[in-house]
Length: 275
Image (cartoon, rainbow, N blue to C red; front, side, top):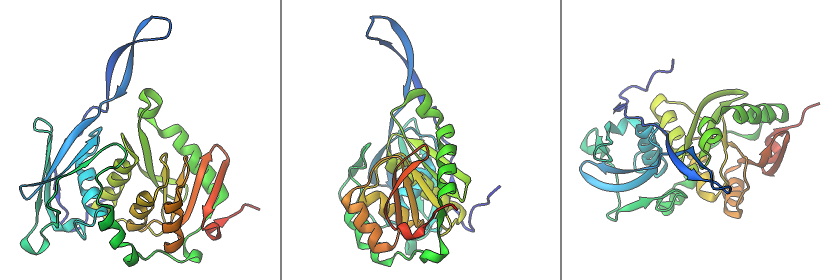
């Protein structure tokens, strides 16, 4: 079992039921029960100041908050946070920074982050892109067979999606080994939660592969790069800004990855075809 880093933040354990049951009427007029994702609002307070409201399933809210702070470059490392406590009765996450020298930087405006990532502080993320250092091509590659095995693993993994749909998945792999998988109402939340898990346990991303069901926009690519991951695989497509950022950082982006098919949009030098 992985151990947290030295001086890791104290985290509450406030996971929620990810699905709820409702009654619907189908095209034949029949009434039946179905499962849907149980989306909730979680407002984040940092040292008593309101920062952001995240929409989430609440499966790992503490890691989501930690990853959000890391990816928005509001903190430099997980040890800057003393504690994250989530109270669903108040729909609030209270973040306490460790000491004045590590006070969390925050903007004066209130940010609302919705299902498609609206409200993320993109300018702040973009300003830190030039500082990202990723492994060289010869240090981090992926075999086509590994990519296909990864896709097969994720096809069998998505529990909430299979039962309730309307969610996105992100997962972190080391080779063909699945390290952690997250489902949430947005691809951004799922990726932030994985980033939080990596920060909490001091996991470097240089030899890792990130999978997502969501499209690879510039913001998603930057978040992956900030976690040190050079190879990203998506079941969906890639945007022009995603490609631009990936080219600048030397990343590989694979999209339209379903079954045994995939397309390498940028960074094909990291792909090793099977003999």
